[in-house]
Structures are given as C-alpha cells and as structure tokens.
Length: 163
Image (cartoon, rainbow, N blue to C red; front, side):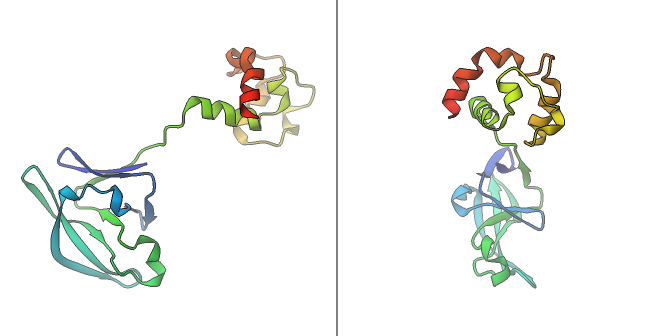
C-alpha cells in the first residue's frame, strides 16, 4: 500500500502502484482528483515520453507542478500510462500490508514441517526444506518451547481450516 499526502490530506492511496525510477505511480482511480488542478507544464523524458503536470491544491494552498503523468508514454513505459506520480514536497510513503493473523496462521500451517505441527521431530532441523522462517522455527522445535507453542492445542483444528 502506498499513500501520497500533502497539506494534511491524503492525495492518493493504492496497493496497485507501479514503481519506476523510485517513483510510485498511482492508478488514476486511486487519486483524489479534487486536489489536482490542471497545469500547462510539460517535461520530456527520453525513454518515457512527455510528462504532463498537475498542481496539488489543498485548503487554499497550492503546490505547483507537484504531480505528473504520461498520457502517451513511449512503449518502454507503457505500464505507467495515465498513472500519477508526485514530488516537490508531496509525501509518498509505502505502508506495509496488513495481513490478517488467521491468514498468516493458515499459510504457516500449509508450509510448516510436520515436526512442528505434530509436536514431534526425529530429524535434524537442517533436513527441512521449507521457507527460511519455518526452518528457523523448526530449529527450536525438538524438545523446546517454540514461539508458536501457545497455539499447539489448536493446531489440528486450524490445519483442518487450512486444508
């Protein structure tokens, strides 16, 4: 998820941005157009084409040419056609996605080694070929209390949901 803000207002917010040269290009439908005012300013990029600009206006303040887009990009930049990027004081930050805990638990149960989900482990942790996160957890599983031990009593019920 990415957010663009200026003047205390969210100008754009989307989890479907495209990043080009470090800039987040927001889909047009994710931008609050009420904060954009037309500008006659353009610039030319040798590989993207001609950029057109908007002023960003919030509560009587105006940030000139602080947003741009490519209405007719060159073929190499086709993925950013009509997407809007920001600069010049507009704060753009990437927010981590919030993944629901149940989704994480189900994902874990589908990929966890049996030595964790069955509470037993006779093989060495190095023999597990899963994700690094579950491999690290499995290293603590044999005869130890693991970070997931409070959930062991409901493992079988959760595994049924995962399957």
